[in-house]
Image 1 (cartoon, helix red, strand yellow):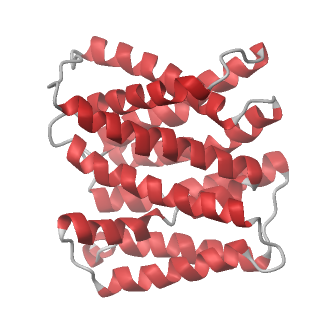
Image 2 (tube, rainbow, N blue to C red; image 1 turned 45 degrees about the vertical axis):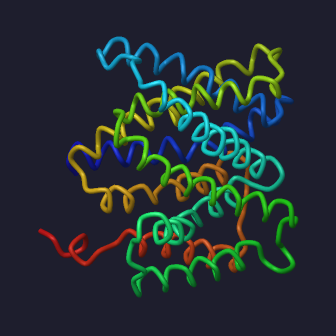
Image 3 (cartoon, rainbow, N blue to C red; image 1 turned 180 degrees about the horizontal axis):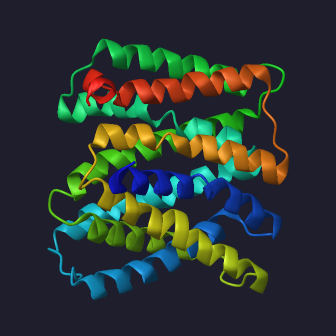
Amino acid sequence: MGKGHLFVFLAACMWGTLGIFAKYLSGLGLDTFTMVFYRVFFAVLLLAVYLKLTGIGFSIEIDRLKFYAAYGFFSIFLFYNLYFFTVTISSVSFAVLLLYTAPIYSIIMGKIFFGEELTGEKIIALFLVMIGVFLVNGVREGFSALALLSGLLTGFTYALYGILAKFAVKKEPPEKALFYTLFFGLLYLFPFARLQVPVRAFPYLFSLALFPTFLGYILYNHALREVEVGRASIIATVEPVVAIVLAFLLFGERMSSFQMLGAFFIIGGSLLVHARPSIFFDR
């Protein structure tokens, strides 16, 4: 495994811990807005230090701030809160699997905004994910309609994050784009967060900002200098696997046979969206 592939693998493993942190922090009495606020707050501080030390700096065109204001609202304020909310009212496994419906929304928005081709593989992936969502939610063992709705909206806002990122990195380095996106997200979160939290929650909050947020994105961005986006996306599907395994080990979360089959369909659909024959047959 090359350095780039290793970086993607490590980033995906870190992202797989997001739901675990959310469960622990919820158990300490923190609401969703407060968890997300401190996650973003510490990540912004870490990124500010990174941008200063690497010489990337903070300069940006004034007109671009309007774009980042919108980016921060949809991709930080909505996305982060929806994901953590879904975890707290359902389970880590359920939330992370519905997060991986994102490629389906990406297919639709890619067609609308970028005129991307709607291939046979993408259509098959669409049906696989739809079947997977039905099986994961289940009939008798399903979660509430609210959990299903928030989970599906998480997938949508995650896909929107990727779409907006394409516009962002055309003019700014990925680290600077992430900084301004998080910064505006922080402004939206501030009125809703409770600033006073238990002292024992701070190690979790800082770790949440350091590992799956700051290091996860930095590693992934650097990996993309060596690894094709398609290959990176395939390696990154280890994220739901890590989340499900950790949820089982730490919280005893179990999935029914139908839900496991649904997980297979969702992850398989995600793989199919990103896969190309050359990815599997290149030497």
